[in-house]
Image (tube, rainbow, N blue to C red):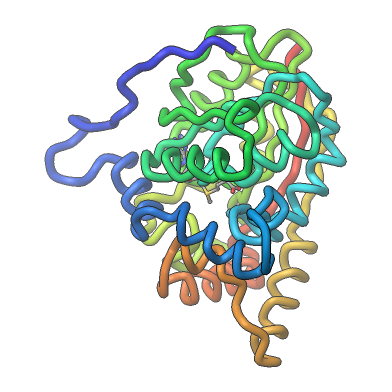
Length: 292
Ligand SMILES: C[S@@+](CC[C@H](N)C(=O)[O-])C[C@H]1O[C@@H](n2cnc3c(N)ncnc32)[C@H](O)[C@@H]1O
C-alpha cells in the first residue's frame, strides 16, 4: 500500500464558523495525550508483565459494544492473513491492532484527529505491532492512497462525522482493488428525529451527519459497491446499553476507556445515546460490500 502525504486540513472553508473538520477533531482531542494513561490502566488491570493487544482491548475500541462488536464483525468479514486493510476513522487504533494481531492483516489506520494518530502509533509500538500497523492523519474522503491498492476497507463508527458520504464511498471504491471489500459498522439516523446532544461522536449537532440506512445503501450502490451482507444491529446495541446501565446501577465501576478519551462529559453522552436508541433516533448497522 503506497501512501502519499497531502494537506488534509479543512481550513479556509469559512471565516466565521469552525470548519467541520475542526469541530470534529476538537470534540475528540479534548483529553490530550492518551497513550501512557491507557497503558498504565492496562498494566494495572493485567497485574504483571507488559500489556498486550488484548489487555488494551477493553480500553481502545471506541464504538458500541467495544471489542465484542469488533470480534463479531471480523467473524462476518473474515479478513485473510496478508491482506492489506485500511481502517477509516481508526481512532486510537484499537480495531486496527486487533485485526493485525488476530487476523494477520497489514493495516493502515487513517484518522482526522492528529493526536489520536500519534497515540495510535505509540500504543502499537508498546505492544510490538509497529510493523503490522501504521497510521496516517488524513480525511477519509481524500485518502493518501493509490487507486486499486487495498483488499479491505474497514470502518467502525466514523461515518457519522463525515458530511459528504457520497464522496466517502466513492473514495472507498477508488482505493479498493477489483473484488475488494468494504466492511462498515456505523450509527445511522432513526425515523424519530435527531439524537439528543452531546453524543459520543459529537458535542454539537454541527459535527454529526447521520443519514437513514436506506439512503446510505443508495449511496453505496451509486459508488459501485455491491451489498453482500446487511445486518441491523440496533436491538443488540440497545440490549448492551441496558446491560451497562444495570451494571452501573448495581454499583459496578464504569469501564474506563471512553471516559479517559472523552472525560467527565462521557456520562452525559452515554445516557443521551441510550435515550436516542430507545426513542428510535439512531440505529446501528454492520454491512459487507464488494467492488465489481
Ligand atoms: C467514534 S471514533 C471511532 C474510532 C475507531 N473506529 C474505533 O471504533 O475504535 C470516530 C473516529 O473517526 C474519526 N473521523 C471523523 N471524521 C473523519 C474523517 N473525515 N476522516 C478520518 N477520520 C475521521 C475521528 O477523528 C474519530 O477518531
